[in-house]
Length: 402
Ligand code: PMT
Image (cartoon, rainbow, N blue to C red; front, top):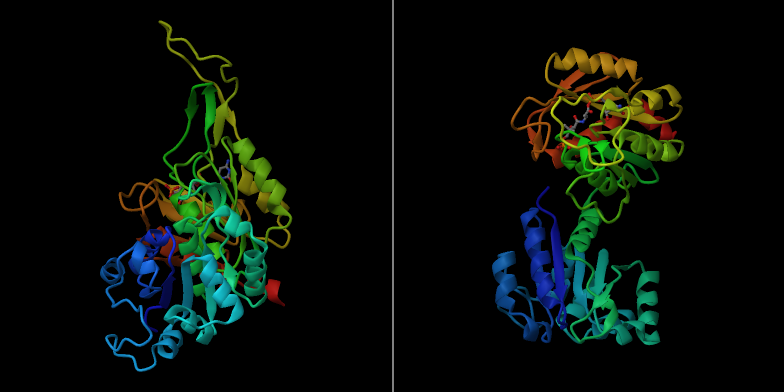
C-alpha cells in the first residue's frame, strides 16, 4: 500500500496562508499532497509556496495542460483518498452546496465521492448569514465534514466566529478520516498520563520525571482508532488532543477520583501515569521556613488506583505499565498478577532512549497466560498503536463484539 493521497483545496481568503502550514504538516507525516487553488487564493499566497511544500505542481486551471492530465477534474478527484478545503470561503461553500462547477476546485468537488472536509473562514456577519448557514446545513446533510471555525479577532477587525479552526485540529481530523480500521468505534477508552504531584507545602511538591508523552500518544492513538477517549493527566507541558475529554489533575487521590467516575462505562483503561506511591502526611499550609535543623517529612501510602480497578473489574480490559529500574520482567509479572491486569507494558526506565521524557520507548508486553513479547525501540506514537493492536486481539476485548 502506497502513501495516502490528500487533495488540499485553497480558496481566496486571508487564512489561505495557514493552508501552507497544513500542507507542510501533512507532508511531514508521509502523506502525498496535491494542492488545487482558486484564482483568488493565488492573490493571497503564491502557488510557488505550495509547490515547494508539497513537491508537486499546483493546479489552478482546468484547461492547463502543464500538469499532464487530460481531464484534470476527474483525474484529480479519482486519485485522492481525502479532499480537504482550507480555508473554504462563503463563495466556495455556496458553490459546493448548489453543485456549481465554474472553476477547477468546485468541479473536482462535484466529481469527488469520498471524504470531503471543509474548514470555513470568513467575516463573522458572513458566517452568521442565514444563506451561509443553510449552505453548511446542506453540505453536512450530504456527509461533508464541516470543521467549525473558531471565535476571535478576525483580519477584518471584527470579533466573533469566522476564524479558521486551528491547523492542528484540521491535521488531526484528516488523520482521523484516513486512519483505518476503526476497531475501537463505540468503545470508551480511559487513559492516564503524566506524573502526579504530592504537596509538601503550597510551593513545593514530590513529583517524578514523567512528561506525559506516552499517555498522550495512547490517547491520540485510541481516538484515531475510533474510540471515545477520556484522558486524565497529572501536570504536563503538552497540549491535549482537542477531540478527547481532558481532565487535568494534580495528586494521586484526585486522579483516583476522576478515574473511578469513568470506570463503569469504560471498555478499556490504560494506566500510563506515573502515580506517586506516597504522599506527605501533613503538608504545610504555608511555605515551610528554612531552619537550622534538618527537616523530616512523614509519608503515607497513596491509594493504588490500578489495584483498586483490578479488584472492581467486570467487563473492562485493564492495562498497566510497570516502570522499573531492576528485575524488569519479574517486577512487571508481579504487578500483572497483583493488579488483575489483562496486559502489562514493562518499561526499563534506566535507559536513555526509553521510559521517561523521551520520544521513543522499548518495552516488553506481558500477558496473564505467561506469554511475553519484546518490542523493538520505536516512537511512542508507534508503540501506542501497537499496544491497541494487541488489546484489540485479546479474547476479552473481542467479547465486546459478540
Ligand atoms: O510520561 P513519559 O515521560 O512519556 O514516560 C512514560 C512512563 C515511563 C511514565 C510510562 O511509560 C510508564 O512506565 N508508566 C508507569 C509508571 C509507574 O508508575 O509505574 P509503576 O510500576 O510504579 O506502577 C504500575 C502501574 O500501577 C502503573 O500503571 C501505574 O499507573 C499504576 N499505579 C501505581 C501506583 C499507584 N498508587 N496507583 C496506580 O494506579
